[in-house]
Image (cartoon, rainbow, N blue to C red; front, side, top):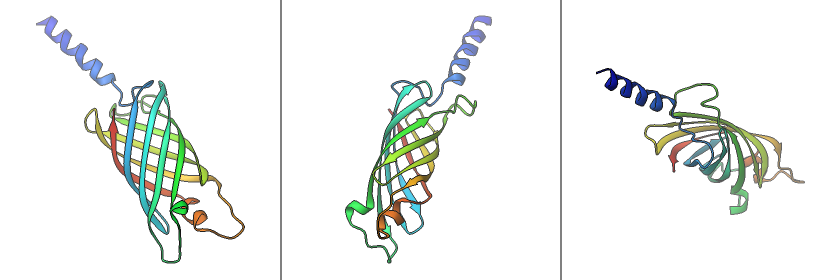
Length: 163
């Protein structure tokens, strides 16, 4: 009986210490909605773990619905980002299925920061939310749709997948 309890306690401690961000080699994909003033759109991201608490990846945003006063071409609506995240869920000792990540993004339209969280219901499927904000804005001679679409605070949420 003591051996059985010991084995169960050992299994429970391994499960309790498992984190949803696995560190080096970890891969996450997110697909979601993007909400901001004057535009709504879609977002897709891919993050790859480089170290225990650091990941980098790519992000793509596309503004679908624009206010009537904005006339934007495909190039104005789309942006590609290089993302860097500090995955700190295990550092601040939260739920092992929760990944919290502040980060920076270098995009074709601005340089910004973000704060996100992913919660996984299973090892491979969860939800995410991100708040993003510009730090250095894209500027043109005359006010362009790019400045109005990509140079503001936005909120994203959607589905997250773990590979």
